[in-house]
Image (cartoon, rainbow, N blue to C red; front, side):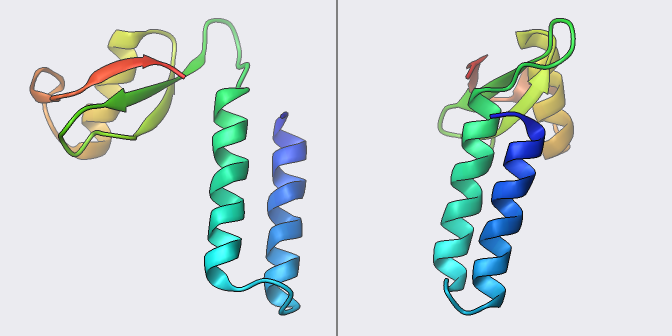
Length: 94
């Protein structure tokens, strides 16, 4: 899914919510699904791809875009305001 398709799908989900055809929970689920699909299909500029953290800590489930695993770990650490060496999670391509 490209960026334009993702945005159109999110706009459609919001229109359905605004018109009362969908409740908040269903809209949230729909938007999350759109974003996850976009992230897993992401084909960015040279070398960029989506990476996900898995583990028991706060990083679990976070997905970031980076050029490599090391940069992804740094971005996750920045999001959590932690030192990259203290992140208790595996980081791998989505």
